[in-house]
Image 1 (cartoon, rainbow, N blue to C red):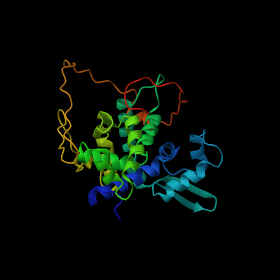
Image 2 (tube, one colour):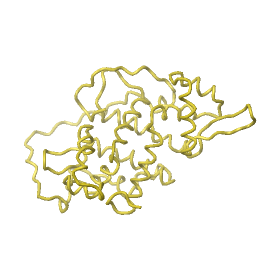
Image 3 (cartoon, rainbow, N blue to C red):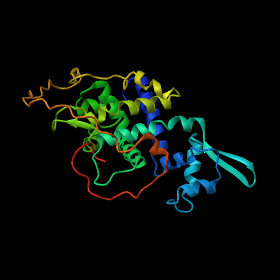
Image 4 (cartoon, helix red, strand yellow):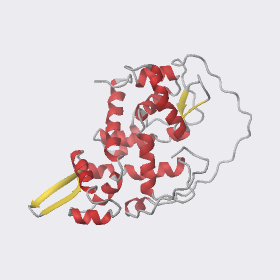
Length: 283
């Protein structure tokens, strides 16, 4: 049954990716997946790697990952039970460094550096906002669209103004942009930069190799230079003012504050609760 007004293939794609995000976003799930990425272990061995989880928190989390098909429980005997990742769970792990890299490059920078795992958790929080995948898919496919037209796509069975709360949240998060009330919406640079991540999640959820993400029919498309969206679906012909600002010299590429191997090190420094400076999509 269709849940959006997107074409059937895109609608199924959004549903699969939404389900994948719901599997890994709940608190501690990413850390538990990384702790399980070892040869089969006893429960006490896993718990020792996650000392910040209180007694009774870990077991239901592992059970939910087993139910989702990402982890498995093996009973060798009545007193010997081990846990580990399934093949499906291991295939998902390469998406995590992609999420961390996107956050490092596109989200606001805190005063104290964050661990790669915290970068992943922040990214997942943004992507699991209500209606977020459907809105991102619609804006990628339409490039620019009014709120009313967007509501017909992502909320075909609801009142159209219900699109405003999730849409405003994505604007606040820095993934969507608009030039003001009544103006069309489009992906921000940070939202567009999610292409490799969402393409990889789509491929994983469809049971395909992650390295096929560049071939994704929607997120595999790249645009060189300024976007020139078709405006047939907007209610008016919007003309952005011509820019007279001088060209800004390209900045040298900034080295990531972490390396991919660090994501799997289980180092979990205490996160600083400092105010975030201006710059980049919000966390």
